[in-house]
Image 1 (cartoon, rainbow, N blue to C red):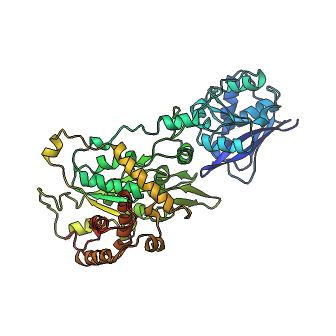
Image 2 (image 1 turned 135 degrees about the vertical axis):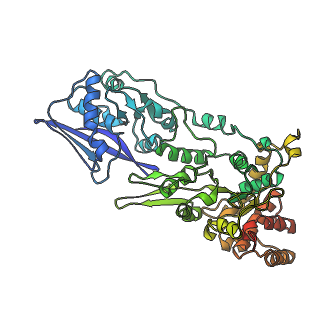
Image 3 (image 1 turned 90 degrees about the vertical axis):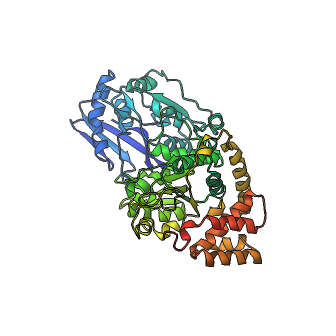
Amino acid sequence: MVPVKTYGSAVYGVEATTITVEVNISSGNKYFIVGLPDNAVKESLLRIESAVTSSGCRMPRQKIVVNLAPADIRKEGSAYDLTIATGILAASAQIPFEELGQYIIMGELSLDGEVKPIKGGLPIAIQAKKESFKGFILPTQNAREAAIVNDIEVYGVTHISQVVDFFDKGIKPQPTIVDTRDEFYHAINNYDADFADVKGQENIKRSLEIAAAGGHNAILIGPPGAGKTMLAKRLPTILPPLNLYEALETTKIHSVAGKLSASDALITKRPFRSPHHTVSDVALVGGGGNPQPGEISLAHNGVLFLDELPEFKRTVLEVMRQPLEERRVTIARARMSVDYPASFMLVAAMNPCPCGYYNHPEKECVCAPGVVQKYLSKVSGPLLDRIDLHVEVTPVNFDELASERKAERSEEIRQRVIAARLQQEERFAAQEYVYCNAQMSPQMVREICKIDDAGHLLLKKAMEKLGLSARAYDRILKVARTIADLAGSDEIGLEHLAEAIHFRSLDRENWAG
């Protein structure tokens, strides 16, 4: 018999590669799968046999050879079940094979023939469109994410019998259609939280507005119950809305990680990821035997929030240093190397000491001498070097909590942030991979963040009197530039510098006694 070809896809990083599945049936009585399959792929023939029988078809009792090409790329996972099953049915003349080459077919099979969801539906659909395939047949649960891609027919199926009917009888399920732009603009501003929910804390709201406007990383230091987590969770609501390209890029990562639900088509809101402090370094940055995106990639174009920062293992925090600078992470293995985007805003929160009440206006700290400094030293200098804003959070008093005064809404703050970001887009239009003030290099800081003689004098006195470290110099200038952008000023004024200096708490000598 002539080998029959069906087509599937393999996902590496956030990109897909088309896999040709060749099936040949000849005299004999064994099944073989070749082309670097892993155990999950090898086991697929047992699932396929039961699923094919359940659909009313027969499994050939002859020698079956399945080749997954290109043979030098490792094939992993159970998503090839439906691809291989369709090839076997066509090779045994139970369904016609003429149209098979026009479709990408992917899905995991259960023993009763049910088609289960896969990972990476969106990047597979993007690659299928690039290679001019007519359509994509995949599990119904993944159909909406794949249907974001225009000019390709997307068919969601729930059982292998639907695929048999598709090619044998021409009975096609209703194609899944998603209006990408309508989906995008419909939910772009739908947030459950709002800054209007926060009573008081106007100085903290101001600091997060500055962080959002310049893309700055921030750390919130304050006692338990002061509102650090509540404020951080509302940061995505004041960030500029995702554009369509960012939304697609973010959705691809979540699709590869299998984090999209059946109702999701497109991620339209900036991600907010908050891993527990027991997270491993692989879970944070990505990796594993079969590389998967980590929390920093799932937070791409959004916010990564690390609560109780000193409680994270030091090794976990240190692996973030390079991704924070390069805004992507490379996972290298002996056989492959994959890149994941990781352009996120880091927001961390921590108590000032183990008991939580160092520098508290009312409660006394009960920590022994030297304990506060030891606690703060759990966060390394190189990591702090990548955090522009150090914000001291104080508890909210009763009068503010009981006040009926309405606080400013997120939408109002967001408009100011968008205006500041537009100025930065114009400023960095000629610079590749620089979109906001936080991404400026030291050389760009010298060129763009120029201050007058009075500003130089203020900065010099601040560094001497407050004992600011050398690393604080560039950070202050970057933050001052963002504050000036929020004020609509072309020049960095004294008031902008003074406010920026205020946000370098942890750089002050003897801050922790």
